[in-house]
Amino acid sequence: MKRAVLGLGLGLTLCIAALMVLAIQSVENRLSKRDIQWAHRSISLSHIEWDELTGPGISIGRLAIHPAWPVHIQLHDAVIDPTELTLSTETTTAQPPKTPRSDPPLPPVATEVHVENLAISWRDRQWVDGLSGQLYPQVSLARGEDHFTAQKDPKHTRYWAGHASMALPWDGLTGTATIEFKLADFLEVSLTCPEAVATHPFLMNEPMPGRPLNVRMVWKPETGEIAADGTFGTVAWSAIGTTDTETHDIRVRVPMTELSSVVELFDPLIPEAQEATFSGTLGLAAHITGPPWTWSFEPAAQELSVQDALPADFGGDRIRWRRNGVAYETGPSVMGWVGLDQAGWMPEAAIAAEDIRFRTHPGFDLVAIQEALDASVNEERMRGGSTITQQLAKNLFLDGRRTLLRKLRELVFALNMESRMSKDAILALYLNVVEFGPGIHGISEAANAWFMKNPDQLSAREAAFLASILPAPQMWHKRITKTKKVPIQRVNEVLNRMRRRGTLSAAEHRRAIQERLRVVPP
Image (cartoon, rainbow, N blue to C red; front, side):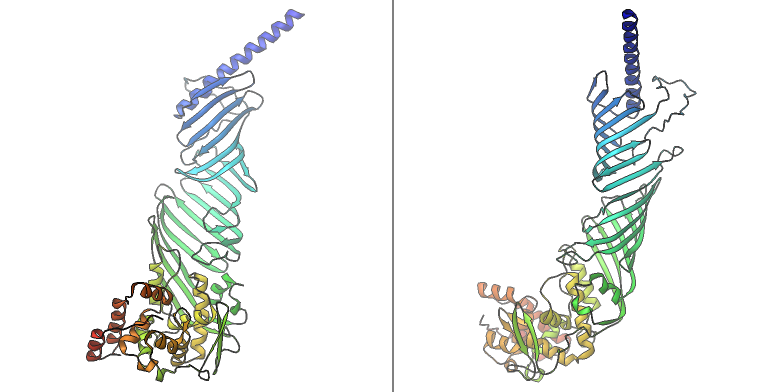
C-alpha cells in the first residue's frame, strides 16, 4: 500500500513537472513570437514567474502563471498600449492548428488573466494607471471609484468595445464621466459628465460652477484625423482637425449662442445677472495648434443688449462705488467733478490711447477683443481689449482679475451703461473715476498731482502723457519715480493717433511732439 501511494505521488509529481515544462516552453515560445523579452525566470511547485518583460505594446514587472483550474495568470506593474498589443483569443473550445507548430501546444484549458497596478497608454502617452482586475477573457478593471470594462471581438483582433466610469481625463476639468467607446481602426468615444467643473485660470480664479458636459468624438490614429462635438451647459461646440496625442491642430467653433446661455455658465458668480435681462447672440471660431501653442480667435456678436444689471441707484448727480474697501463718490453735484467742457485735451487723448472706436462701438469692440485674445497665447490670462465703457465698469464694480469671468461681467455692465447713458456721459464719468496713480482718481486730481494744473490748462502733450499711463498707472508711477524718465514713445504714439483722428492739426501735432515734457511724480 505504501509503495502504491509513493508511486502515485511520484507519478503525479512527474506529471506536474512535465506539465510545467510544457507550459514554460509554450509560454516562452509565444512571448518570443511577440518579440517579448524577459530578464529572469523562476520555478516553484505552485507557480512559474518571469520578471522584467518588455515588448511591442507591453511592459510587465512580473508575470506569474499558476497551473490550477482554470489556469491563473497574473501581471504585476504592467504598461499596455492597445494600439500595438494583440492578445490571444484562445478559449476552452480552441481547436488545434491544422499546420505544424514549432512550439508545444497547450491543451484547451480555461484561462484567466488578472492584473495589479496596470497602466494604459496610447502611442507612448500614458492615460491612466493604478488599475487592477481582470484582463482576460473579459477586461474588467478598477481603481478606487473608477472602473473600466471592455469586450474583444474574437473575429477582429483589434476591435474592442466597452465603457468606463472615471475622472475626466483633461487638465482644467474635474468631474466623474461615463464613457462608452469602440476601438478598431478608429476610436469612437461618447462621454457624459453630469457636473464638469472648469478650473483653468484663463476662465476664473476659482472653480467654475459644475455644468453638464457631453462629448462625441471619432479619432483615426493612423491619420490623426479627429472630429468632435458636444455641449457644455446649454452651449454647443464642435471641433475638427488632427492630433497624434502629442501635437494638435484643431479648429473649434461655437455657433451663435444666446448671451443668456453664456452668462448662465457662470451663474451664480455673476450676481448682477440675477435681475437682468439679456438679448443678442455670441459666437466664436478658433484655430489652436501646438505645442508650442499658438492660437487665433474670431469672436462674433449680434445685437447684444442688457437691461437691469446696474445697481438700482446708479446714475444721477451722485454716483457711489467702492474700491479696495474704500468708498468713493462722484458726479456733477460733487465737488471736484470735471465736465467734458472743462477737461481740455484729455477726452480726446483718452480716446486715442484707450479706445479709438469709442464713439462708434456699442460698448465692446470685437477687433480689440480679438487682438487681446491673440496676445494672451503665452499668458493664460486675458489682457487688454476693454473699451472705455468696459474699463469704467471695472473701475466702478469689479476687481483687477484678468479672467474671462471678469471680461464677461465687464461686458454685462458696459452693455447696460450704453443703453442708459450717452457717450459723453460715459466718457465724463470715466475721466472722473479712472486711476492715474496710487490714490489718484479722476482727471482733476491727476492734472494737479502730475503737473500742478487744472485739467483745462493741460497741453496736448501733457494730456497725452496722462492717457499713456492709463493701462497701468501704478506701474508707470513706480517706474517714472525710480528712473526719472517718462514713456516718451508711448506719449508720442498717443499724439500720432490724435493726429490721425483729426483731433490735432498738423501744426498742433508738430508743436506737441517738439514740446518738452516736465513731469512732477506725485
